[in-house]
Image (cartoon, rainbow, N blue to C red; front, side, top):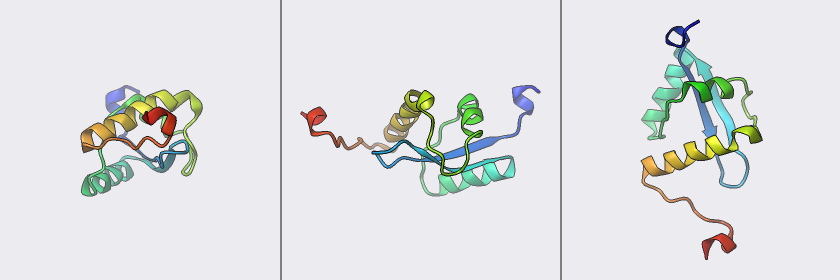
Length: 97
């Protein structure tokens, strides 16, 4: 199956700044379209990455992302902050100095 014929996938992540991000929504086709619509409605930054979506779609709702994906998800979170015009809060006082 070519990538062009694969169904649209959407995965929503929640990150509290302390624990690993978790999967809060996941779906294909019309469910993916609804996840994207709700995200856009609420001003949630979106990033298109079919390969990452394929990996994340294998996880269950509520699952933390695996350590193997920490770096790529950190880049996604940094992108979301950038798009939203926000600066992440530094919680470790040693890093803030």
